Image (cartoon, rainbow, N blue to C red; front, top):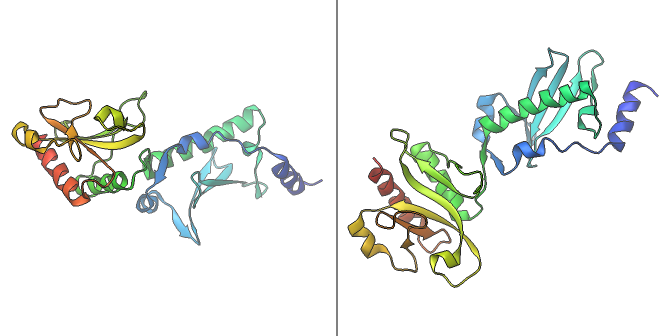
Length: 237
C-alpha cells in the first residue's frame, strides 16, 4: 500500500478530531471581513491558504455553509494531503500540527467572526444596526452569563445598551418562556410616562430610575427601538 492509498484508507476509518469545533462555537462569520483577511471566493466557498510549521505544510481553510470551516493540509515534500491531524490519535508531531492549525483557525475566528448567541430576528437586526451606525459589537463580559452582553461608548466606556436573556416571569409576564430583551437609558421624567408593563418594562438588573426594558419580540417596532438606542447613546455621553 503506497502513501496515497494509506492516506485514503486512514481517512475513511478515522474519527474526525473535534477540537476545532470549540473555536467556532456560537460564532457567525462576517463575510465582508474575509476578503480583508486574505480569503478569496472560489465557487461556493471562501478559501484562504497559508504555510505552517516552517513551510512544511500548506493549510487551506474553506469557509462555506457549515458552522466550522473545512481544512485541508498538504505536505510540500510529497505533495499529498496530510490527514492524521484529523484523526483520533495521539503523538508529538501530530499534536504540533493540530496546534498550528488551531492557531490559524483561532485567528480567523477572532478577526472574521462575531459571537452569535442571540437568535431573535429583532435582536439580530439591532446588533447589525448598532454595528453599522456606531461601529460597536456586543461585549460578552460575564463568563457565567454567556447569553448577556452590553454596548459601550468608545470615548468613556459607559454602557448605552444591554442585551439579555431572561425568564418572562422576571418581567412580570405570566409565562415560563425565556425572552431576549434590551435595556436602554432614559431620562427619569420620560421614564415614568414610558413604562406600561406591556411594551415597556422597568429596567431589568439596572437602575430603574434611568433604565427600561423592551422585549425583542416585535411588540415595539424596529424603527422605534433604533430611535431609542440613539437617545440612550447620547445619554451615556
